[in-house]
Length: 304
Image (cartoon, rainbow, N blue to C red; front, side, top):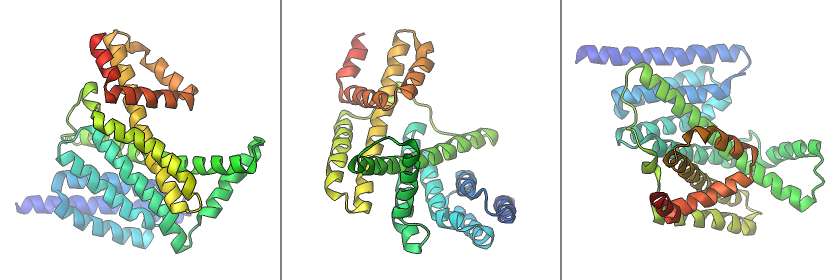
């Protein structure tokens, strides 16, 4: 027992030293790599929580806070609570035996909520950039393309792109944390998520109707609250997340269909078509996902 506690404290000190040293180097380089450290803190904390549990993880959180406060820039300091919440949420999903898909989805939603609150609420309150300045940056990018849009069309497109950028930022952050954690689990021989077949990733039919309703309702209601940025972008994010789930379910159906027809080798071509035909491919995936999760395409799959 005594040796286990010594090992636990030693590992916490090692993780803290890694983060502290990298933050110190980053401060000497003018805080060039700040965005990486919020994700690094999450991954290291996930490893520690996976091995020693939530209670002892609080000591490592405090140690991380000390080095972040001393040598971290404002970005790492503000994102530090989100890093902690993401790590605890991900580890909780792991301990509850959820599959990797559901755990990643929950992590994406946590990161989306965090990015939403930080970008639209916390950062403007602290005076580190308001929504207007961010939208001006997006508008400057569209000016360079000279699309010939009316002012109303330009405003709607800018708002859409900004909301989508929040989702993509949270999505990539969650994916990096997820993939890095899986690699480290394998490296240290930790038990990872339970395996799940593609057919097990299907959401219930009731949930599919809720998702499609959220997609249409969020974008429809956002029109009437466009003057309130917090509510407007909140509704947009809800719609994006619901649509993302249905698109993923649509892709799962395509994989199951190809597998049943012994043509799974065409998966790469399907993925390439999805990328090249955006946004039309996403609309198609959303509809396929809804029809699959609500029942009709699942019944077709069983008959074929």
